[in-house]
Length: 109
Image (cartoon, rainbow, N blue to C red; front, side, top):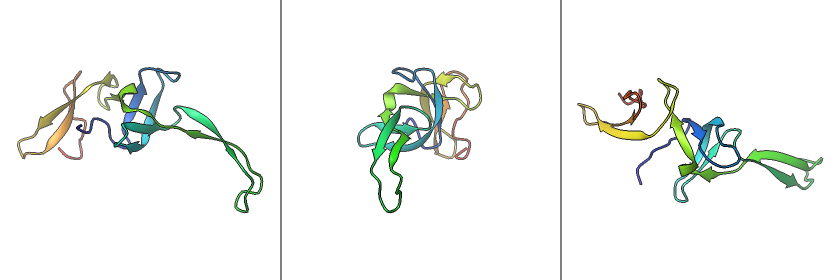
């Protein structure tokens, strides 16, 4: 499957308990089709006291969500959009916004 979403992309969740929220992709797990998004799908992790963390306690952290549950937010038009692939004159493949037609990968252009 081609890369639709990349690390540090801004995405909007389109279904589930966090529907409508936006965040930045922290990491991807491509072999399972998962992404971890900043501030989305927060879960409680119970930590035992250790020498490093003698207090222990309950820690909130992001859990992965499926890639198909998130849509890229276009940096130019600000809308949640699908991604198209296009080739530049120099042969580089770039991602393009389906709504406004602008190139998303400005660093490659």
